[in-house]
Structure formats: C-alpha cells, structure tokens
Length: 321
Image (cartoon, rainbow, N blue to C red; front, side, top):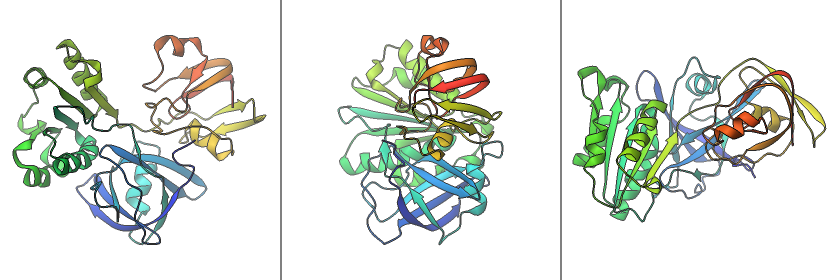
C-alpha cells in the first residue's frame, strides 16, 4: 500500500515567503474537516499536477500535531532539481486545490528516551518544529542544535529562539559559528536519544561521531531530506503486468510505475523506508542506486532495486511487478 494511494483534497490556505529560497505552504481540508492526526517527525506526500507531468514529493510537517485544522510544510527551491520545488514556488498560490497523502512517520520521537537531542541542518529543521511542539506539550526534555550557512538562509531561527529559549542553540557558518559534534555528543546523560536531519554530510558526521563514542544504534535516529535524482530517460519491463514503461529524465521510476497503474508499495519516496524494494528479474546494464536501504552486496547482485530513487542505463531492465 502506498502512502499516496488515498489522497486528501485540500485548499492552499496560505503561502509565505520565509526567505529568498524557502516558502511555507499551509493546507486545509477542502470541506473544512480536521486533517488526520500525526506526531512530530511525520511527512506528507504532495501531488503536483504540472501540465502532463504528475509529481509526488514528500515534505515534513512542521505544524503543531495538536492543531489539525491545517498542515504546514516548508519547501526549499532547488533550481537544479526535478521541478517539484520550482512548481511549488512558482505555481502554487492561495486558494489552489491540491491533493496530499495522510501523514506517515518514519522519524518519530522515541518516548522511552530520557532526553531528546535534536540536530538540524538547513531545511532539515522542519520535522523538529513539530517534534519540539510535541515535546513541550508532553513535558519531554529536549534541546535543538540548528546549523545553517548564514542567518539569511536559516529559516525560522529567530522564531524558534523566541519560542523555545535556551533549548535552542543556533550556528551560522558565515560568522564562524561551528557545531562541535564530539563535545556535544560526549556531554549527554545516559538514556539520551539523538535525532539528525539535514545534508548528507551532517547526517553521516553525527552518526559516525555518536557510534565512535559508543552510543547504542537504537539511540541514533536520522532522516535523509532527499528527492529522486534526475538522469537520462530509460525503459523498463514490468514482468507481472506484461508491459513496458518509459521513465523520463525528470521522472522517478516509482512515478512511472504508478503512472502505468501498476500497484507498488511506498512510504518515504526517498530510498529510506524499504517499502518499495523490488526484485529484479533481468538486468543487462547498470543501476545507479541512490537509496539508504539496500546493503552493498544487494546492490552488487543486481537482484534488488528501490524504484523511488534508482536509475538505470543499459539494454534491458525487467522488474518483478
């Protein structure tokens, strides 16, 4: 079952330019009904109809889990991306009707933790905004460390400091502020869980540092904030469906499969949850694996693929779908 099989009709209630590269979008149910409940760290899939092109991108919910009259997300514009963020920035306006999925949470707070240590980079701040609201309401100890390239690109930095006070520490690289991960992760009470969302390098640094310091793997949580990459067009044969499909340069293999009407499981659409893992029947060519799920030996075997983020080049790719 895909998170975006049963979409919810919504109205864009507000569009706010947060800074030169980030906009906030707020959605209300088209009938005024309450939207489905969620917990901090959840994301929704937003369907974008751009002429003949249909995209489905996942975005973290940043709004309060305790106020279900509307959802809010923030989108960073990526001019070199597949076009989803450009569509959101250039074509989505208040009053526009769209469709979104129900929330899915792959980055939830572990309520067994004695303390929640949150580390955000850039637009990776968004899931923590809902998490901090949840933690405050439930009386859970937490602190946020938020790093950005500059104050001008640090979305919500000022408002977070005002709302959560000393629980928020901010670092702007352009004025020499640097987050010392080893010092931070070395000085935490037993039972602390760490959560990180942001650029790939930051996530890897946090995970590696925590691991080297002896943190239990179950206490380290991360969410990759990635979208499917672009590439050359390619064709794929779906064995069970008995059809050939074409995957466009700005289209993901998952989107092409969905467009054909062939059912495929998915949740995160970013190569992290494992739901869309698909067996390969035949592969005469090379697969570019961009996921965070498969093991190296699985990738090398050419027997598995994550359709949400992987691409193919070669003569033939046949999938067990």
